[in-house]
Length: 171
Length: 63
Image (cartoon, rainbow over all chains, first blue to last red; front, top):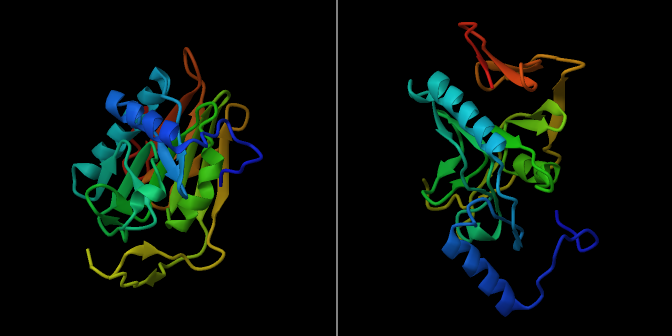
């Protein structure tokens, strides 16, 4: 979770904040931005190498799983912990694999629940490790974290089993 | 999609735990239990690479 003790920037003026966000959306620069519990997080644009790794991994997953109908593979997707108001809390894994039997729900604009297998490619300042708690919350079963300076791979696995749904009728 | 499933509420204590790390100095093979692939860091011509291996066919890819 972002804290005020370690902010990169705080835009306290709501007019400037809204204008800044609107500028980013108009220019298409918001593709990789996220919102963490209501806090807008401007993400660094991925480098060419980052995009190469993303594309290559997604291609391999699509080859192994996607074309045979065993999974849906996404190179970038919105993942949230809620249906309504999802834009208040979502992350965007670089690659997401939703198996055919996934418990996550595709709502078109985003997925409610995490991927069965996700990939996060680290970039300077993109705060990958701060997202682990969220990915666990949305029951991402495994997460591969790719580091590039130096090159490292870390595999995280959701501890425990099962899925605990709560049915909340917000109407 | 059901109308009354609107939020993910995980059981208490659910967390993602590190189960393996692969580096050039310690190129451990990380085996997924979710998809039929394993991952390992290996040396490459211009930089380190990610070696991906299919668990059933042994087909490999270098990224």
